Image (tube, rainbow, N blue to C red; front, side):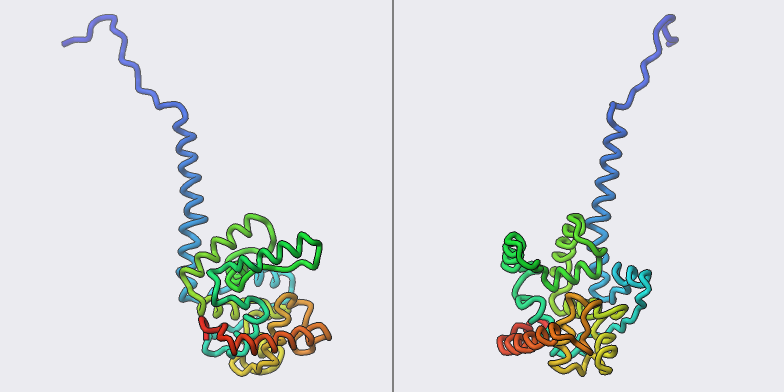
Length: 245
């Protein structure tokens, strides 16, 4: 049948308004999922078996001209004395908490609010998440990501792997990273042969590795390492390293 003369052609279907915005929102959501969910999970899964190559801090220090010395060693080649010392110094409840020591956080917040010397509430798990995956700083975005990565490594790695990565990644002097490089640089021995006193000195300088020295400690580091040695004895007697050793 021929088209009736004068009939108007059918109007073309039009896309509903706002379709472009909806696609934009969908794309942003996908990107966020990849960046903050899928990406971190994948990286954490890989680092469960592969040593993390470098950290943001290591790269920053290289550009500052501090050099780079690091020798990754497995847990079995790190002295148990060092494990006890860092737990005594940094996180006595490492084997008990799930990544966050809320009691320590409350104490730190109370001390800070009272205007006393700033205290940290970060666990070894949180420090590992920060050191391995994130940039140096204290902004809220980084703190949020630190919490997310802490949950991921607690679930995906377990305590022995967290301790292994921690001891192989933290800064122990200008351009010195990890227990093996720190032991060789300061005492001329491998990490497996560190004594309790040497381990305590290394643990003592963790908060300020660019200012304090383990090999030639000042009065404060000597005093601090003495306390760590005593506390490491308590850690050993009470089995506070049972999740690692």
